[in-house]
Image (cartoon, rainbow, N blue to C red; front, side, top):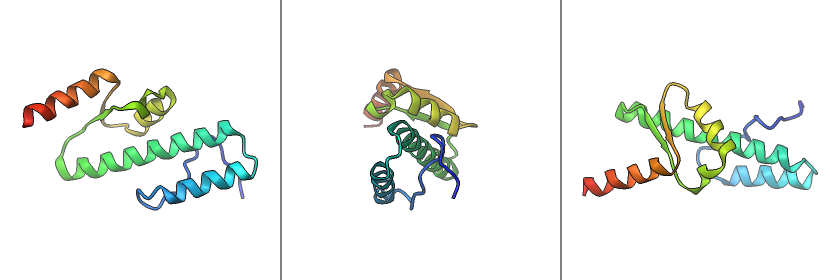
Length: 108
């Protein structure tokens, strides 16, 4: 088996976090450095965000993604997700969150 690197996502079964949690626990118990585990978690979340964005784009035709919320205060995660979202217009940060809240309020 090849050695994983920080940019390698963990294998996932859909959006069920159980497989991710089990893989992280296995790595931690196996002595994998925290930086590698953290990088792989970020890569996994970025891949999931991109996968869901593509599904939504296929259904709606929209090509704009807003990365908002506390999880995207992690600059490395936001960068990984933005890279994974190649081909989309990506808005990130607190102004994007405020825009989303305004749009929801306007929609009623």
